[in-house]
Image (cartoon, rainbow, N blue to C red; front, side, top):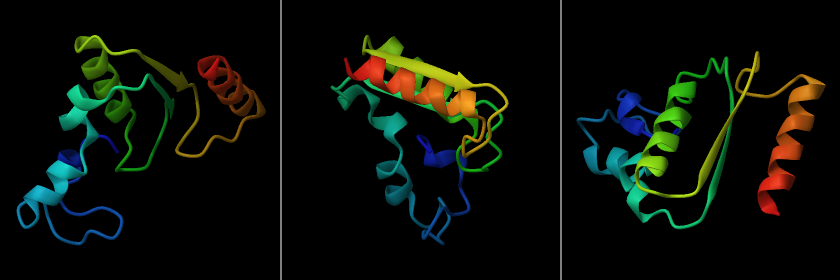
Length: 103
């Protein structure tokens, strides 16, 4: 998740709410630090991700922030995929995108 402000009632091992641990949520939100990201970033996301902490909007917003800041980024949404990719085509697409990106 790139913006922990969208998961205000806890995440993973963090049981405190946003209002109880504001600094933790801010520190754990890469979106709020996008201006400091220097390396090119490839974002892969399942278009139907049903994990409440990693809704596709998270990747879309980080990608938009990086673009707006003039950073190098690519967003790939894998159609019909959830939090874990299952279709052979999606896995191959993710591998192809990664290999292409690393070149």
